[in-house]
Length: 125
Image (cartoon, one colour):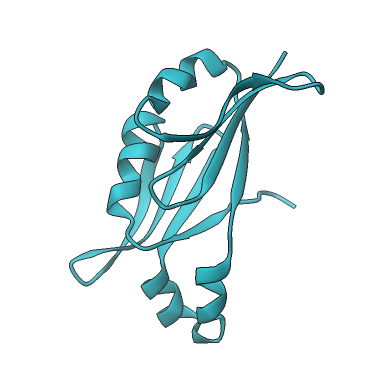
């Protein structure tokens, strides 16, 4: 395997860009319009990549999976080199797991990003 990239389905991409691009520093490398708004984007930062696609775009693209897109829940675990650099960027995000240190040696914090997905940022101790 060369790479694994999550595709997160969302109602609208534009509200998610402030979290991924403005706060976390991802770069939008691909965008596909869907009418007057975005239907799909690829976001990249260093070796990390995430794709966002609207439910509407996914349903048009693969009609056989239309009902699956809306009932799929995602939890992303993102290992970072310095959690202290990430935490201040989450100040307006909905925190679903406060900063903690686990028994397995990770410092972690988890938020719900604007698309509704849980993203856990973690650093090895």
